[in-house]
Image: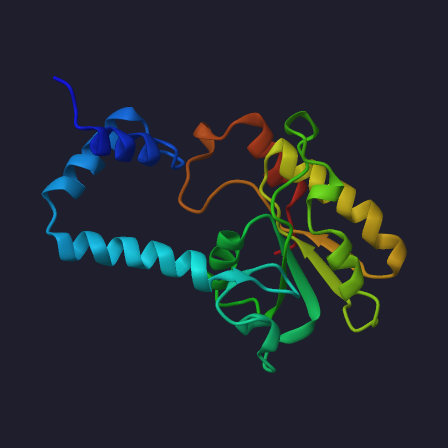
Length: 198
């Protein structure tokens, strides 16, 4: 059965979204087709508004609709620590703990030379600029526990330590509620290396 051209275009565009394969794109497209026009227009308006109003913070590179962002302008936040993350959505994971009250810095990815992502493509220069006034005492590197995230953490550590700032790395290892029997050797190794006194 031949599909109408606009439906084919919609499926093709939806497929370009991360995590959306051909079948999911087709399901979403047919859902849009069945949805009342007002709902579809609200979705389209919300997408346009995100592109028009959401930008990156000029200080920390987080996504925001006010520049500088609410984290950077909040006087209650601890200005002596900066938590470095790969992407803006990583900030939400840290904030969920309700135990971190410092500032953030979003790199915009992790070092991945094979994909053409080197230090120049990340927001590293702006991080170093933030350290120049001497107010920051600790940088917490919260990159993902992947090969790229680990390489980025090591690179940042070597770059930042000579600047006289304490550089720490988030602990990684066995998740709470997990069974040790199912932990792979790298996860178990990280858990052993990250042990602390009780």
